Amino acid sequence: MGYNVAIDGPAGAGKSTIAKLVAKEKGYIYVDTGAMYRALAIHFLKKGVAPENTGDVINACRDADVSIRYESGVQQVYLNGANVTGELRTEEVGNMASRTSAIPEVREKLLELQRTLARENDVIMDGRDIGTNILPDADVKIYLTASVETRAKRRYNELKEKGEDCDLEQIAQDIKERDERDMNRDTAPLKKAEDAILVDSSDMTIPEVVSEICSHCR
Ligand code: DC
Image (cartoon, rainbow, N blue to C red; front, side, top):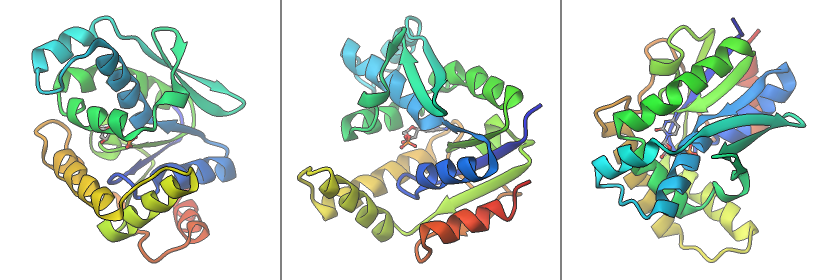
């Protein structure tokens, strides 16, 4: 059994940035489960499946195989044998992932992959239901959040840095909608596990958040 740290929280809270740094400091593997939902989302987009047609989404799951490899310590996501890591982080893919991840069969498809990674390795696993559902016995559970305004501003700066045209108001609106969907779905909604440590990063620097989380870990 690996040593398991679960880190859950809403979109844009900084989970991946923080989890990568904690992984480096502690020698864990960083597992990004959102990337797995995003890989399935790419499959649905390629097949032209509408997220509201639940039956079509479930059918499309049958010929999707998502797997994970680590190359130089960095997670690579494969969809049906092709490395899709570079295609995961667009708004279109994120929105499709948010919609389709509400479907129990989609979640079921990725559950074993996530549990196996945690069983076989020391991991920090980032997602929405890791502490509540995937790894209920995780050694450490963190619920990382930040205000909508802070998260929108971070996302805005990230996109601007990449030279992408974007609108702060629109980003804040998208974040609110994604929160609403992720927190209110029937299956495995995003919520803080009772035994999770709440970290609100709105007024914290990255090193402060990393140090706070590391202080709870072996
Ligand atoms: O963390 P992210 O933005 O890459 O995740 C994309 C979407 O996938 C997110 O809106 C909700 C869903 N997701 C989930 O339902 N469960 C997870 N463990 C990870 C992500």
